Length: 357
Length: 79
Image (cartoon, rainbow over all chains, first blue to last red; front, side):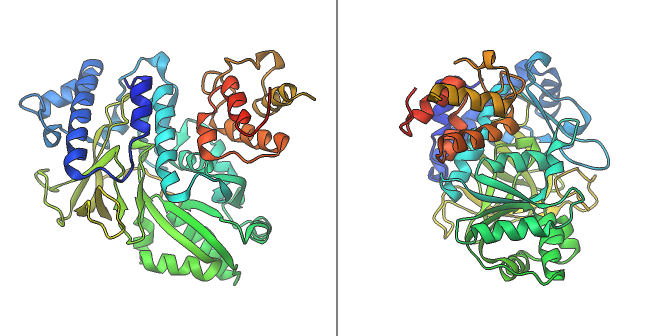
């Protein structure tokens, strides 16, 4: 869908600089054109649009979002079988998994956009990297899980990769100690899924009374707060726990999902998640699905201009969130900034990367 | 060993392909063995063979054997 020139122009867009008027106009045009594209190539999607819109969508908010769970129940793809390069799967342990079909062009574009977004936060230089997971996670058969995709996507930013957990997901103390001793003065990058970082790593270090004194490290974590909330761990308690055990670590949560790989909403220094230029969030009323104003909690819809091989450009998630504002976050970045409050109560439990228990 | 031999050997080792397959048009995601996991192994191999550190732009841009030579040339490695 995106030609080479268009693709490089897309990749080179300033990540957090477009103001709302410019961004919303551009997004609307891109998302309407993706809607047409998928209607032409995907009969299931066409039916869905016909069933949910009385006329052709003519503005951003009138594009009917696809419910995230439909990616579990149906093979929603807009490419020929032969062009399928990779199938991304949510890592749910129970119930059906979402399946997202990528052609090689979309897969490449998504990795490039992910890298571009993260370069903003980490710089271009690769850092010694500690992955708080087991190497075995990467080699599970049957398509790529959300956790494996996250680990692999982020590993581009590292070098001398070290896995903090062994094949049984237990702390690999010798490996971690050696890693921190060797790189304690470097700009270390640590990555893992929130609950795994907390339960398998930080709590394991606490139990052994193991503390390190690293400097200039960055921890990027994501994958949901469901288990953290069940255990009553707040964002600030999480950050404090990390710093007590490890030392000087800047901690950034992120929000993202396998249905829109490549898009990552990073948490800024003020504690808010930020939409990069290629994507946006919209909050809808939980009962009638109408868009709600900033500050009101509702269902999170995620929009992305990158979804060309499957109709995932407008997805209604089962997450509850709230937009705080647009273009005026104290951190200086433009675009919408928001918080996520967790899953809709009693929603069908959708597999995601925090299903490790 | 010439730089060309060195880079070819790095590709053979990291990707597990045959020497005869290492040509300019050998491309990421076109050859079954050059996937994202093998890509990171390749990066590490190139870094150790040529004693340099590639940045994230280089990793993303390295989409073929021809492109790999072009990127290493930026680090004063001649082919």
